[in-house]
Image (cartoon, rainbow, N blue to C red):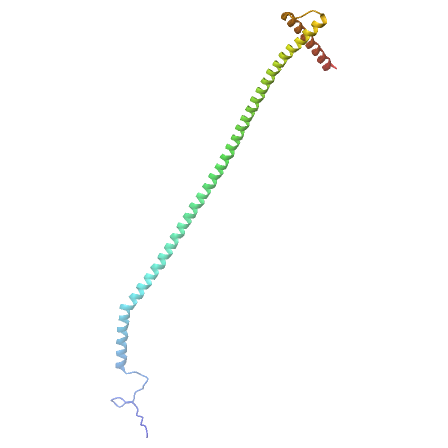
Length: 190
């Protein structure tokens, strides 16, 4: 079999180039393209614009929120730093007050201890003076009795008379104190 290839021809009998489209097809394609552009501009582009605007608003809102959050964080940090500085100053003041109170308590305790020591020393001196006075009186009595007895044996007469006994003892003790004073005066001179 043989194939027959016929050249394309127009009604006028001219042959057409298959690469060049027919003018009606060009018109239909142009009308379809215009309708497609109108439909695209009417339905698709507004949705893209809306999505773009929403996305832009969301990004700008996010950026604004981030800036606001950053500003709030900075304000909170500044507030925290101010409170921290205030707390440090207050702590330093409390420590200083505690030191002053401690020093004051120590001074009061020393003063009380000194007063108590002075009171104890005064009481001890008073007690020593009282005991000395009592010892001197007791000693005078005992020395007087012994001196009277001894003097009575030496003299040979009784010195039982109390007034006479007292005078004798007083004179003996005065002589004894005078000799003791003279001995101390000689000891300090030499």
